[in-house]
Image (cartoon, rainbow, N blue to C red; front, top):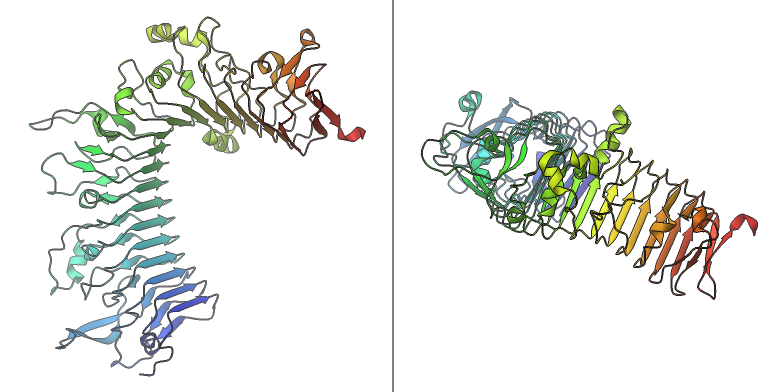
Length: 615
């Protein structure tokens, strides 16, 4: 055999649209040092290695033995890696088996057949192979086949029905990263057991005891946009995920449970412990109804970030667990909960993002025990401040310092179905009084003094933040340090008696196109602690501060202001209306861009506004 490129280690083939195959078997065998192979955008390519023109004496054994990474991208007609033939095993004293390719019998559209070993392959990336139905068949000739896989990435393979077949059991100990995106026909990731058809076609000489899947090194799992997917993890895989640190599941519309029970594997309610997981994201899973089909406990000792939204069929948490042992009937609440937990399940959770899930709203909520370290909550597609019970829940979170209200899903609905979302986000006194005993008890006493930071964004129907706290009760947020409001298209101003502005140091307003002024003089004069003020991309803003006739000849001193940024405010006529005087420190940085005015600080420390058009 002629060795053509004996030292070639990296080969990239791109935009070769006249190739039906890349290598002959002889050429493939000559690439003895090849470690990295990438083939992309070859529209008519049907296979990588072809044996069609080879003699029957030519084998496909020992090709690409040193290959470490394989990337196949944009090969819509690729049906297989190598021409598949009927394989006959012939004894060999040195290597154990010699392959004899006789006649091509393609039973299934499978990328790798039984003889593709790749003993050194660490990274496998497959993109855009539309007709591919399977990556592996259920036969392997060598125990070392694919045993070093570290990373598997599968994207836009719309005919693919499974990822790992039963014969991959025991070969995934090195797998660290699994990424699956946009595979429309994918039904299962880890296929446990064999179908009847597989049993009839299986190699009868191979042992039948396949054992469970072990993914003891798996650290990152991302599965998104797989609309036919029904199963994520078998129990055997889930219980071995001791190194998993991040899990992201999104838009898998047929998934009902994350962990699938395996018949005969569990005799007692299992405990799933994920000791390394720091982040879990579960989004847009409309049929998800449970974490595991039955009684269980899950523990997440290092989890710091949890995001669950648009999973409306499932309850988020169930806290009260029946005592294990003896005959029990499954509580419907427990059966339809994502997390069955006790006080030790989330000891380090710091950041929580929720959709419209209620989490123990009520006077008996165990929030302070379950979420003792929770620092921030982001509410998406809902407004918790319209519910007294939600406010009571927030009140119990002793380390909570950041609240976010994100209506980005409202914005999406607005484009598709018409306006959605709230006009105001804070509950008013009348609504609270109408809420029964819980509401009446809350009026005059409920505040969130530990919350220092608030962000409100993407609320397209928001007119006002709200005027919802009685003067006797005081503001709901008495100690707010920073406030950011952005992408609220018809918001009139940021005024709200639910918010105390006295301790505010940072105020940011961005892309509120309907905003005509930021705030009134009466609120502005309370901003004594303000160090940073930003107003950007507010097309209708005419003044930052508006003063009434009664406020004539008023004066405001922002004695701590360090940065004043005004950007892209095409309608801006001045900083403050009327004859109001604004004083700033000489050290204040003025950053004015895309505005028809210029600002400067006089020698007396007075903010001067000059129209560019008059110069």
